[in-house]
Length: 324
Ligand code: PEP
Ligand code: MG
View (cartoon, rainbow, N blue to C red):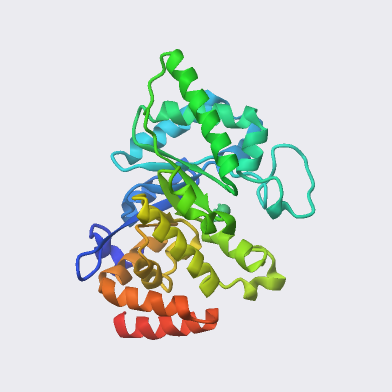
């Protein structure tokens, strides 16, 4: 934490005209929990549970061991919520069974794996629901593409709840269920998904790679991975608007949430919650506290009309010089 950012930690993420945003942390390890207080995060917006599994091997993580970890986390984070993302295996993350694919990012990933592998999904859902007895838990489903597969997931969730109820286990009956918006099809259909979920979390790391057809981890095309491309901003905008029309909060948990260059645009688009690696939060908060919401809104609508990512970057750099 930089010396000159220390003063920001206890302050709210509020614009000059009093509009408040929520800043939450992206975490992967129980050992990182101290960072919430250190950097002033209001709970966890993304806990990537696959990291717990990858260290042990996905099939060696029992329900009880998971409950032990999840319970420690929610007890430390409460009264703020912990958003646990269900296992997001595949893509660039090791799969539970040795498996080769030509296009792993378009392959067996995230929810697709979970729906095929009950031995992964059921113990994790049971452990997360049981952990919800100890503090607020939100469930976040990774790599959703279609309403059909999301509904299939909900069927499993309802069955697991019924089973826990029958066994006399205590859990939060109304645990919120959200989805990662990281496949363009979901952003384009956000109005329909918004009727069936409790919150959205936009995953711009994947949304950008799928929208621009640029592998997020390939150096040969790294300069074509344009995080502020207007096509991506339009999908973010559509997702936020659809969420708000249906009264659900919209978070963003890709790297963009921690990039101060993106902050005024995201705030101006109406994002409710920024979730990023904790060290990035103070600077995002500083930018928010230096602006009027209406100025950010004006910037965001210009950015949506831009023709190239370069134009967006030029707009925002000028804006930051004037409002920094
Ligand atoms: C994302 O895709 O933006 C995201 C937050 O998920 P991950 O980086 O774990 O794929
Ligand atoms: Mg992702």
